[in-house]
Image 1 (cartoon, rainbow, N blue to C red):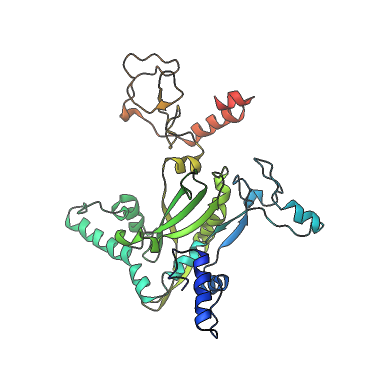
Image 2: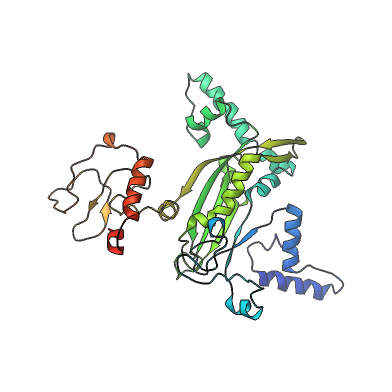
Length: 350
C-alpha cells in the first residue's frame, strides 16, 4: 500500500489505513511510520541524518561538527528552550537534512534477477564498442553515449576500470516546491551508467543522494555534500562487496565518478565562482574577460570587441578561441590571495 500510494500524501495513507481497519476490524495495518521502518529493514537502505543551520547556511559535519552556532548567520544549532529546561542535557537540533548512502542502493540493484540483468549494459556495450573499433579502423559507428569517449575506453584498456566496477554521474539542483517561492530545497542524485541510456534516467533508476531543505540556498555547499562523498570515498578505498542474483556470484566493485553535472546556478553553487554575467564568468576559471554592457553591471562573454564600444576596463582587443589557455591551480591561488587580502567589503566585492 505504501508503494502504491507513492505519489500521495501521508494523510492519504493514514485514511486508507483507517478505512481498512473499519471494514476489517481484526486487521493490523501498520502505521505510516512502521511501514516506512519495515521498508528500510527489508531493503537495508536507511538515511543518515545530520544537523544543519536553521537558515541552510552549513551542515554541522566534518570541520563544523562541534560548532554550537552557525559560522555565517550566528543562529543557534540546538533548541535553546529545551536545552535550558534539561539543564543542557537534551540537545535537539533546530534543523536536519538527510543523506541516503549510495553503496546500500547499489547493492540492492543486484538483489533480484530482473534488476541485476539490467546492470549488465556497460559490460555488453563496451564489448560492442571494441568490436566497432576493430571493424572501423579505430572509429565507432556513433558517439551515442559517454561510453564511446576516449577517456572511458582508455581507462578500460589500461585496466583502471574493470567489468565489475560501476560508473556514476553526480547531479545537483534546486527544487522549487511552491509556485510563488524561490527554490527552497536542494537535491542531489546519482545516475548509474551500468543501466542503458533509455533506462538510467527514469525516475525508478535515479538514486537519491541527499535532500537539503530550505528556506535558503546552501552557502557552504561542501558541508552538505560531505557525508555522501565521505561515504563514496570510503567505498572507493575499500571496494564494495555485491551479491549478483542473476548469476549467484559475489564480487567486489570499485566506484568511479565520471561526471559532475548541474545547470548554471548549480555550477555556481558547487564552484563558488561568479556567474556567466561576471567579468571573468567562465565556470572553469579560464582567463577570458567579458565585455560589460554600457550603463550596466552585467558582463557578456563575447570574444570580439563590440563596435563603437567605450567602457573603461573592458577595452581589451578581440580574442581568438585558439589562443584561450586553460586555467591553472597557481592562477586560482594567486587570485584567491588577492581576494582574502581585501581590507574592506568594497574592495572584496570589487
